[in-house]
Picture 1 (tube, rainbow, N blue to C red):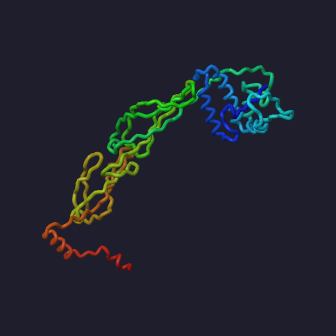
Picture 2: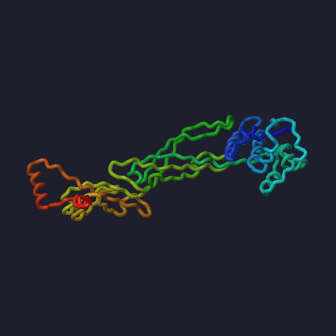
Picture 3: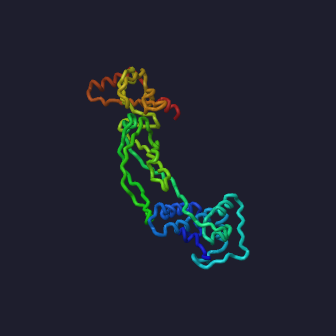
Length: 316
């Protein structure tokens, strides 16, 4: 009988990892599956790939196979060593080689000869791979919800060559109100197509919010730096504040300070519960432009003596 070089069949080296073996098997199984490939000998190649994977995916069988050495060549006349024995320790390995329909080489090493079994076409199916993409939206769209038309490149496996080609795909996606930065929207069965009747994979869209000229975002909460005048902060005032849902009136209490944070409950991004909008006060000092304005500042300094560095100087 002929020696089967399972590593050569999969196109791998002997020191390859288990993950690399699994990945390569999936590639070749897709390429040579009789339901997909148009090659004349696809069925025979698929059989060899499946047999090679059956041995190399199993740590016990792979170890036993490797123990024969690396000097054997594919197709070389082969006789197992006189002392060859394979005793699987796991039930999975035992069932695997007693349920196989592989070559005489495989049966001699790992199975039972003379069973009369023949390889039959195995129904191969695999769920399509998940795809990931990114969609950029404005903050107002995140607040109200929107519909986007996305165009992206989708990988398609060429069943004849095994190469991956790309085709352009267009998809209209409804984005619900209240999405946040980095949130993923799952679109079921919009990923890569499955094989052998298996379902398509899913498409995951990651939300990216464009920077806004007024607001900053943390989760569902919105932050706004609000400029106020010294007299509004000192005397108190009712001022108009913009929010994503429209303008609202905000009451400033007498003695408000720069850096003070005021909360507008429920005025952030919608949700259960909705986020809040936080208003950060920033007192702006107008520059005096007339003599009268300068005199006003001078009088204020005389009537309201205040040294903001008083505590700082005490520590010197």
